[in-house]
Amino acid sequence: MSTKPTKATITFDNGAKPIELPVLSGTAGNDVIDIRTLGKHDVYTYDPGFMATAACQSNITYIDGEKGLLLHRGYPIEQLAEHCDFLEVSYLLMYGELPNATQKAEFTSRITGHTMLHDQLSNIFRGFRRDAHPMAVMIGVVGSMSAFYFDSMDVYNPEHRETSAFRLLAKMPTIAAWSYKYNLGHPFMHPKNKLNYAENFMHMMFATPCEEYTPNPILARAFEKILILHADHEQNASTSTVRLVGSSGANPFASISAGIASLWGPAHGGANEATLKMLEEMGDVSRIDQFIKRAKDKTDSFRLMGFGHRVYRSMDPRASIMQKTCYEVLNELGLHDDPIFKLAMQLEKIALEDDYFVSKKLYPNVDFYSGIVMRAMGIPNSMFTAIFALARTAGWIAQWSEMNADPEHKIGRPRQLYTGEARREFVPIGKRT
Image (cartoon, rainbow, N blue to C red):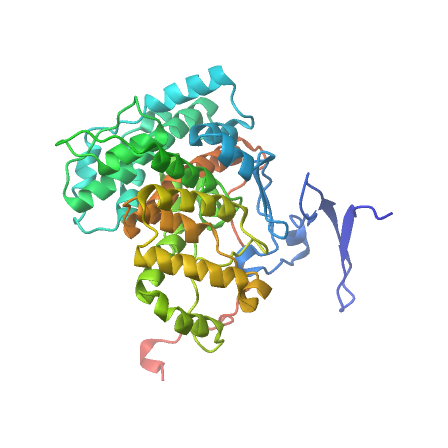
């Protein structure tokens, strides 16, 4: 019977004294070698992309990429998406337990009380060009909140952290929707607190002062699932960015703004936007074969967007949930004959049956389906990543709060493997060749 190791030893081929390091075990996942004392021995590790490095302890989210498992505080994402709304999941991420009825009502009420933006924040929006990408606007507006809500920015005060968390969760839908309205040149629509979280966002996105807007309940629930499925995903690039920026004691608005900037990249949150651009480039089912051929060609730089995942080595557990939601939305809106949706469904079929994609486990991921759902709902491509940021705010603030409450947390300071010039002496300009 095997037992877990409690220590590891590093030996050197030059006869230097071996280094003993403790081995730590979590409640799930791989053991980790605690390398914090390596610097005392004048040696560090080299791990580009942090593929094998745990930068923090966390009890919020756990992913097992081999098994296709995603847990929030121990609860499988499938159960949360089926039975919870987004604010319940947000409460779980923040406090560690699902709320009872009283706790949920109080939490919802506190979020609702913060949905409006400071009136002067509208001036920040107007400083941008009308054609500015919504993510650029969100980065600027969220960062500027530190100039308006400075009464709760003591990151070491639990009450201040909680108030900032409420503000960010409550105001992010307003900021995202207004970024879209500003693009269009439409008047900003203020939140309606009688609506739930998802419905309120849809109201602010699609309503105008000219007529009443009533969110379609099937579309609202689909949007709710998009939010839940994107709420947190362990130590990804944007979450790590929030933690790294926050590790310096930076205020929550600066930290979350940095997370939004990180999320914007096409390899991260921009993947669903890139997926729809790819489908639009394909244009028609008749052109699928040539793109599939390119995807299989190792010498071609083209890659199928929306397939495969850096972490999951089997089906993304969120994708199967979003797949079902995708068909519900298409049925509700009668969009099965739309050329782009026909193309997407045919591409899905090929990816799930073709030996090349199956052998490489290049299954459709959550970005593939969520992009299709949002397009069907009338949400433009440019807003896809903004909605991802809206959803991920729940995870970011939970991770940021956890880090600031951790007595062991330190300012982030990665090391490097220096490969530049060694020391050399300065040469006056007249003597340089």
